Length: 193
Image 1: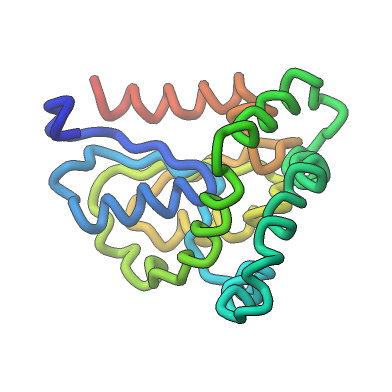
Image 2 (image 1 turned 180 degrees about the vertical axis):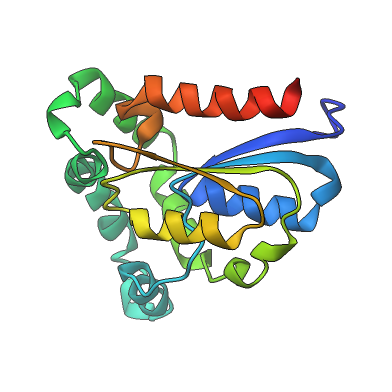
């Protein structure tokens, strides 16, 4: 933002990007005009990543690291399908778009480093400090960050607005793009005008 000479911005974060957007707003509230949180991963939960992080420190696992991380290249399709309410809408172009980052050099190392560095931030205990306008958007069938978590989040942020899109999963910006754009545009119209 400094390099682009942007004093204040509206941050939009999806899933783990929602975590980054909230963290940024808490650390630099003077720089954030508003937040749009799309199926945001804010609440801590015990996951397979916790075990991966623990096991990652074992010397025996260091040589298995590439195999574990590269399995996402083949298993990732099932994750994509679980992110959509209606997987029949997933086209080959969409799948290719998800696979594209997996062709970047050292993508597997970057994902591994991200996984072992990830840790709870305690953001859920600081939500009352968010004083800027906030919109929380979720699909009613989110199997990745459960819809109930987004509903809870919206209720714990002062004056937050909540939009639950029917027949939609974890990626409303892709699966239900018209409804998503309408929700974001309506929210932004009230802030920018």
